[in-house]
Length: 430
Ligand code: AMP
Ligand code: GLY
Image (cartoon, rainbow, N blue to C red; front, side, top):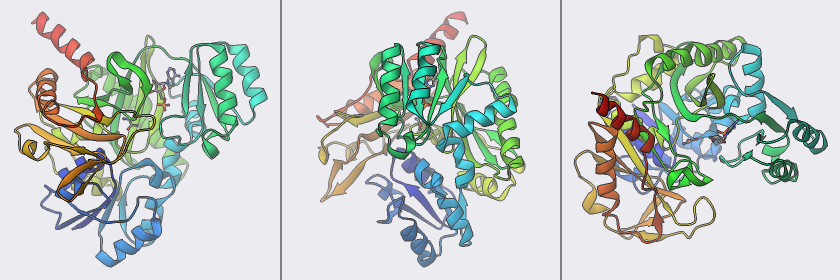
């Protein structure tokens, strides 16, 4: 089959790397791709939001299946457009992607279906929002309703901060994404992520994975798209996973089907593990990045038939096999990220590292130019390793990170610390 993957990050590199191994794939393209993806797929110079360009390419290249990985093209209806043109595509429709693209929509769906989430209120003007926050007091959480590249959430520990956030959002900081604001109660606990592959009716859980959102060691500094991830995530034991399927995933799928907007694709839950049990922080309608990278390293089954089954509505016949090994990825980012950063700095030493056992370097923001690898993004490389334990995967990943010569880059040195702490305790008990 001729396959096209949409996107240009580390997540898309991992998806292409995995799809390239499928015996069903005769030709793999990625639009627009990046310097690393070019090693496993043919990159097409069409941007992820250039829908006309994507459609024209699919027709010209006789593409049979499109995997839409990032949130923006999903929210804007790329899957709807392709399907309407007779091109099979993996990912939710725009109506189903609202689970990610509108926080207000998701909060209402939770209330209607008794899905555990923080209490909340929705506002479309600053005066009412300010009055509510003043009444409720801090800590409290202020969220722009729409997609804001992960930056639209302000966890305000003080009232002043909450009021400033309201003024900021209604002042236009996030454009149309901030036309409405969701204000919710502050939840305390450890965060966890959960991923399920859905076909509109059936959901199968994927292996567990957890990312690190803060930019710096000890989970300090600003929120980012994710500075590293590991799988499995021991915080989600078997009983908790069963509870998540029963209380969150299955009721959500049933509700979306009843509304006439069945959810097909990856449903990714952000959860807070509170004293009273898991509470939903957010839904995403796609694979996490960099969580996808560690999941692909552990997935033993062919990915393509599973994605096709999700699109076709035949997931109940699918079983995914996972390696018993752990995987861990360290994100190398350009100094300055998640704020401004220089572009086109050179990364040296990558080629010598390309075929190390148990280590794969996914590219998140690179291009190749005249034999050189240049960093073009905020998050740039995902150094990903497997091992018998999360600790072993971590040691292998960092041993490779240290060999990469890129003075303009930085990375966290403590990826996986929670899982490794749990592993160490479990070992001490045996
Ligand atoms: P979101 O974009 O909704 O995932 O929020 C970004 C981050 O804000 C989350 O990963 C949490 O760390 C934090 N957050 C969101 N909602 C809450 C909440 N109700 N209580 C505490 N922290 C939250
Ligand atoms: N790693 C977080 C995300 O993909 O949203």
